[in-house]
Length: 54
Image: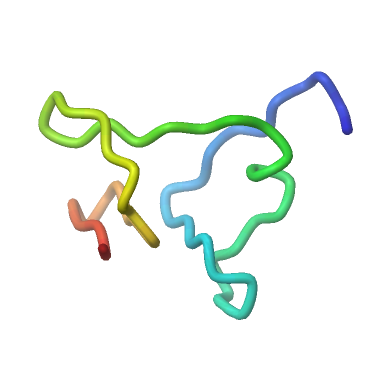
């Protein structure tokens, strides 16, 4: 595992079958903050479209 963290993409999914799954992002702890609250139930997000999938 590298110490250098990758830049988080605009669209990311935790599902390995998704085309938006980026394995390198999950080699590090990442968190999601949405509307000022930390979220632990997000399965997929898209920043530019402003949505998350729970």
